[in-house]
Amino acid sequence: MIQHLQIQGLAIIDSLSIDFSSGFNVITGETGAGKSILIRALSFLLGQKASSDVVRKGYDQAVVAGEFILPANHEGLEFLRSHGVPFEWVDSGAEILVRRQVNAKGRSSAWINDFAVTGQTLKELGLHLVDIFGQHDNQKLMRPEFHLSYVDKFLAEPKLVQEFKAIYKTCYDLIKEISRNLEGFNSRSKDSDYRLFRLDELDKFNPSVADFDKVTQQAESSASALELKEGLSQLLSALENEESSVNSVLWGVAKGLSRLEEKASGPALTELHGRAETLARGIDELNYEISRLLSSVDVDEESIEEAQKRVFDYQELFRKHGVKDIGALLSEYERLKTECLSQEEATIKFKADLDKAFQLSKQVRSAAETLSKHRMKAGERIKKTVEKELSELAMAGAKFDICWEDCDGLKAGLDFASFKSSQLDSLSRSIDETWTGMGTEGFERAEFMLASNPGEPVLPLLKVASGGELSRIMLALKKALVADADTCVLVFDEIDTGISGRIADVVGKKMYELSRDFQVLCISHLPQVAVYADTHFLVKKEAKGVRTESRIIPLTSEESASEIARLLSGSEVSKSSLANAKNLIQKAKSHETKQRRGLNY
Image (cartoon, rainbow, N blue to C red; front, top):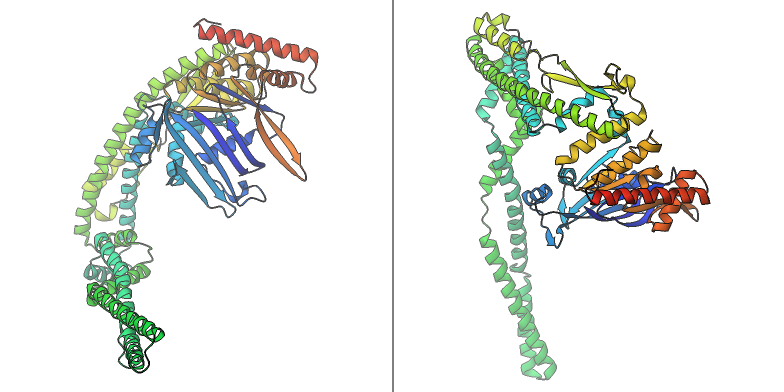
């Protein structure tokens, strides 16, 4: 759970501190009061990109900090261990302090328990901590291209998606590389002498990642050692200058004072004589220490010069071949090798590459088939679960379904006609056949379908679902998904848009039920939702001089009743609206009591 949130200098907030309860937290307020700032702050805290625009005028930076408590078996703790981030145990679990800031120039920094982390690390941790669910998710339901991603959230083995995409990319990249090499080979007759010259130059130079890293490191590290040696030599030369060395001058002064002391002794001359000898001895010791340090600096100037020349030659090759790094240079090297091969040599190389691509293609197809089977099972689970939830959300008899469509498969399109090789042609066709019906997401596309009322045909959501129905479908999906979730906090940002009355009351009950297993933060405009809150917050926008500031304050029971009455009446709080509000609160408390006793409502 998130215990505490601190916001400073963000948007229209000067300074804000919020303590959340572990159950159902509801945030209400008038339109435009700044309720969305809480979502903005949480999103920023957990790694979302942010620019200098979020910094409040007059502030050097915006800072958001959140204190989380994670149970001992939480996956977020394993993530922190794997990244070397320390954490401490308290009575209720492990305490995690996340802090992020962005300055007026748009530069951001992040820390977890005062351990500096990258924005990506923060974003990955955020996936384990908070699940933010907003109105834009309702809009995604209207777009079929997002539906398959919802299905994949229900997979019994979610890793299957990443495994498929990884092997797909490996194979796809190899096919594209073969295509580029083939194109290069077919055009090798043009400028062949120039290509051979470039290849010969690279053959003689023999570049490699290991060699590049070695000479670069050697040149950089040796340069500082050489600079040290030169600097010490100059200092030593100044100290040992025969004509005007510091120590010879001081010893001369000491001798002169000694002669004067013999002729006219006195405490002042004795003191000066002693100080001169002390300084002279100090210079002798300094001279010795510098000499000893200089002798310990081992610099092979010849090796340094060779490494620097090698680095310079690498840079020249980068420039000649129009590349930026060693990896790109080696790719260019391989491309030139292919383009300069004889047709017989090229046939052997292309066959080896196509064999590898064919084997990878079969692995991709196998991964897609496995993923497809799991998606079909997940689809059945979604239909049953969503229909059950929709029934409880006052859509009894609604039918929810998934329409599966085949994908257009990738075609390698490799043309080896110029090689007159049946082997290459056969392998190329086999690769195309293996990819038949398979796209970047697998074999299928998914589209959610709905029949709102019994007896109606199921149609795409885009054609039949109203705003209120979309909200209920999303809540049903969410409630089903979080059953196995490891996130600590569920955040709902006005997903109850388009619903009211009895349905709004059911939505409030559903969110309350979720809050028994997860901490829930809900931004809402519905009094029927707010009455179920364990903690009720009010967002207020206040004018301070010429500036406006948003505040989020916790409400007492009486203040909560007045705010709910305002939500009911839409304007001023009347005796009747207040009585109605208290009646709704009493009914909600009765439901909560039944829930605690394990009764059905």
